[in-house]
Length: 432
Ligand SMILES: CC(C)(COP(=O)(O)OP(=O)(O)OC[C@H]1O[C@@H](n2cnc3c(N)ncnc32)[C@H](O)[C@@H]1OP(=O)(O)O)[C@@H](O)C(=O)NCCC(=O)NCCS
Image (tube, rainbow, N blue to C red):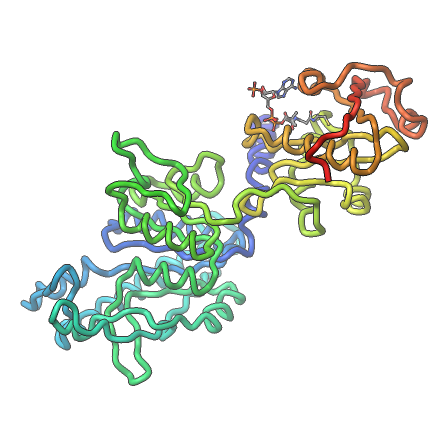
């Protein structure tokens, strides 16, 4: 039992940093109608979990297949003209019914609450409404597309107000003009327009495939916004456009794989394809808002004895001494510089276990060395229990406690019995 609990604690620690990184973030999630009901049930369950973790959710639910089927049932033909629908007055009334039914199903799914969770009886509120202003598409290739339209604007003020109250907002591909007309919209484009208008943190497209596949059928895990991929799905193009338009991260994930969204969001490698916008990974001086992330990163390492124990208060008081690497809101590495006259200490160097081996340690060390040289220090020391080789490979020589400044010798913990390493700092041309 104790082992089970310990496993749970480690699991919780591993994920807590991701949970913190996603809390308060706005995700626009597009679920196409091609998603079978059972898979949609799994997706809704995962969205409920995200909502309970503080994610602000806008769900864009497609209805295409149900719409086409309902038209066929009534003997109304779904006309396409040069690839675009012609939405006649007769078909529009069917669309209204189908979209209304889809909304009702989503509301029911979100009323289920989180299974096995205390307070599960409290349903999550879902709101839908006339949030999308539309205009007629007009004439396309010589043919009037009638009630087929495009997004004119999104009422972000109302959406934001609802999201602020933890209400999941639901959009179906229907928009309204100021003159009271109703228009059919493209679901995937609606999701794109909504994410861009809200400056969402994420735009997530569900699809039948796990993500974007290369020529050999292998999944491409990460794409820049300017990638050119032959035969990329349309959702990938929209995701790249959204990333280029300021949506920080876009993801393509599978609805067929149960839990794919959670794997994508809570593990380093993910399950689908992510498209990264401009701000992805930055190294910067620590700011007040980075404190919680630094603590989440180093607390497990302090408990394992790999880092010297420091209180939250002392880290907060010395925050300006830290540099951090932030990736998608998650603090994945940090280090601090404590000056003692001509010598300075590199302390609390840590990389999140998921991100080790990708130069974070080296980048933090380089930033700390540059700062130390700038501050006039000529030597840098570190005390470490298990990182000795790492520092030795980076120009540090093993030394003794006597070489430490007096102030630091007095706080050196004999119990930890750390090794001491010192590096002589030479002026670097790149230093400011
Ligand atoms: C030490 C630490 C910061 C390195 O982080 P990192 O981001 O993985 O570092 P980098 O990516 O720049 O370097 C990774 C390389 O160092 C090697 N490495 C990692 N830890 C090592 C260690 N203790 N001894 C020797 N080499 C080590 C890796 O194998 C890898 O080598 P490779 O590229 O040849 O495969 C990270 O392992 C950590 O957080 N450790 C726990 C805290 C700690 O001990 N801090 C030092 C005391 S302040």
